Length: 56
Image (cartoon, one colour):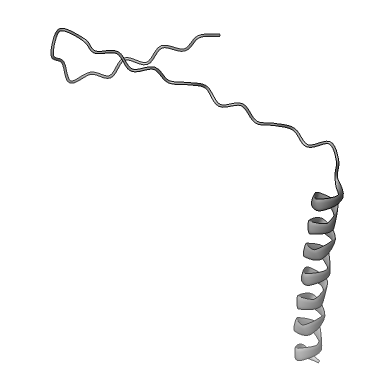
């Protein structure tokens, strides 16, 4: 009986995974992710600090 429950659980998880993959493949509304660009500048003074500027 214990093997039947574990086997059924494995089959259930495989089916759910396959359905999620099919849904992901067949979806047509794909959104592009955008990444913020980071710029580096040469600083005259020598420091150990990093300067990060975000443009919004």
